[in-house]
Length: 495
Image (cartoon, rainbow, N blue to C red; front, side, top):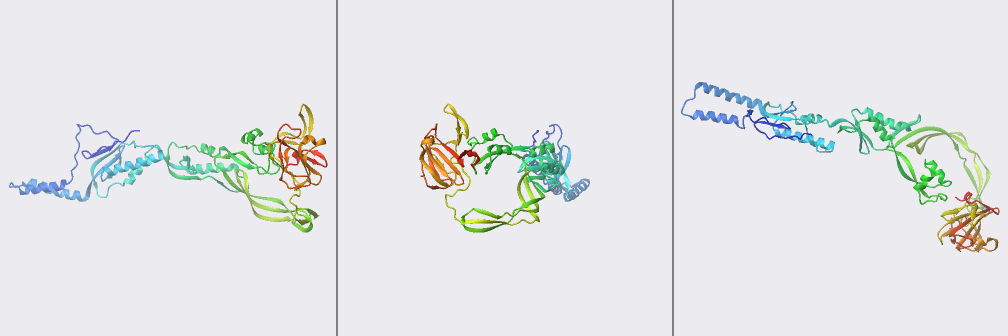
């Protein structure tokens, strides 16, 4: 880009970006400051001479003096400005147009991001301009700025402050944003909006900015992969979680290298991956659907029953309601549901129960089993090859460090605690707990036991320390569940 050269005022003319005139070309000299006063002083000097002034010369000089008075009243000294030969008007001094050029270049540089210099040939030349006829410098600035081809005046699209693109008209950008939201809208959609800070403003921008509206739409709709966390819920399995999140089991394992996929517990946090668009879309759908209404429950207290012990007297029955609700989605996933109206179609019938009020003992069984330890399952329930032969394994072997706490899977009464003998010798240091209703749990190969036969223990209470006693190949907890005296798969009972 050609650099602008400001020429100093010389012989009454100036230029920016233009070459100086050839030396042999005569240069017009404008009247200097005080020329009218000097003329008057000259006339006074003539009047003081001893030689009389010829009448013709006297009349000519009188005419000049009179004309000068008129010119000084109607006109003022100025400089006419042109840009590439286009007249821009007159200014009072060269410094005015130079300031205009500085401002134009500064504005352009801030928009383009680099040091910009005007390429136009700008000239100024001394002239007399009718008083009040000087040009407005702001108008000159706007004209020069509008001539910069590297800058466009249009509608600029930004997302969270990031420049995405621009267009000559606003309508194509608005239509494009509607297309970004369209895939998430249904016949029930009552509102849709982009969650990012999206703005369209009319302003100047670099002419090289992306002006392809379709490319902008593709960018805003493109997905990126983000990591999220998920807290394990009751009933979750590693495989189901992988499939529900669009992942293979191996992919989910890679995201969670320290997790044993065979042992998940409620509240455990897993790292997941989620596809998130560049701009998230929130929609609100108004939907109407029938919903089952739970029956009210009437409780009859019974001081002879433990808490949570309930006997159903009347089962009751659920009702039906017609519900209209506003459902909020983000990128197609439901976030919340706000009920608008509800119309009961079928009244529910009250459920009547007898509920115990007696305080439950701390050790009373809760009716479900928790994991006694958290570790790697080294041997599962069923037949296996060990010690050179095939044998039936009646529980789970869970590897843990020596001395790790072994917890009671549920509350109950300790049936046995000590070193197993006779037919049970292979269990080593063993704890057996009776949980009532025919359910019993075994905890084998402990390094030591912390309870005695007859003790009541609560769910989660430490009952032993892990070890490798009895017939064992390493530190672990052998965990068994027996129902009605028969060994069953513990995986079917653990929560």
